[in-house]
Length: 450
Image 1 (cartoon, rainbow, N blue to C red):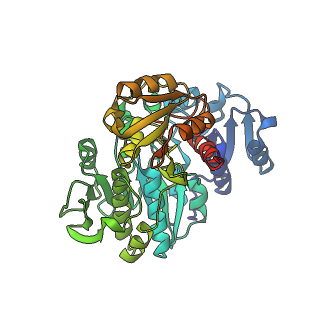
Image 2: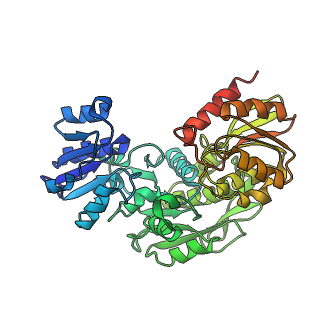
């Protein structure tokens, strides 16, 4: 860890705990800051806050005092999920106090360079692929960020021999000021998290934060097939590495039906890749480009691609049951992700879908529904999804109470040779605390099928 002394003896407020808040508070305390933590959960039911108190960190729990910022704080580190409309955050910005997320803190103390991956879809698969390839190539990667490992905790232990492969959400990137990855990746941009950002433009601007501070010594890998991404890429000062799945290109990394090319030169055949789907091909191109730039051997890259079958909850193969193949794509919390999953299969699909009702349309799925033979829908959007499926010509539909019921209905509706696919096209929060929990419930129910 770098000897970062700029926070020593400064008063810092950490707003919101969870894993990122705890890690940030501990690191700030280690750096010599005077740390106060404020969390909505009552102290008696807050073991994280209790533990921080024993370490000498001031803890305020159960409420957010309106006069909290009168304590003379010089910096606010907020949980990424807390919106900027929060009264304390709004007050901090009005007072012109810097408001950051722990990702910025991670960058400030890290001896290791970063590879930063963001975009609407494909972040986790791309991040995992890069990590696996670099690990196979003995490049000493560490993995962090929105993928589940708190970045500032990883950065505190990293050395200059490491590289930190980091999945970045728009929430995290909004809270960065100097963050500058050596390699940045923007997979794609589609409407998402508008309830948080307000507009697509604000959301896209947050995503562009992954390359905003880069210089000509850095690299920016971006989606050449999307006009909106190309437009944003024009504003990057990094060396630009475009990727495209629309045929061989002499620039960047590209793919046609048969092979992948690096600056126009053939590097591997498509039939050497285990992971199916066009959306996964985009992720693969990003990962291969990043690893080649970082000095990973092509043999290590090929070895991973030959065996990598997907990330948990992202078109994850679960099991074969009575001639049906079952896949868990619980991470598909929007229509675009579900559309990509549907297009990855050529066999008839029994689709399990539904969840939190944000009022969004399912029309984006219509073209991809041609291969769906039956639909089992659940959650707040269950009946809306069934009506949509019927309008697409799907004749077999069932309304289920939840994922547990949906698995039973899907098993009964399915036939030998079918694909049984959980790809909800909706967030999980109406019935499950996270898409991971929803996916785990699905896997558990599938494994119990006799």
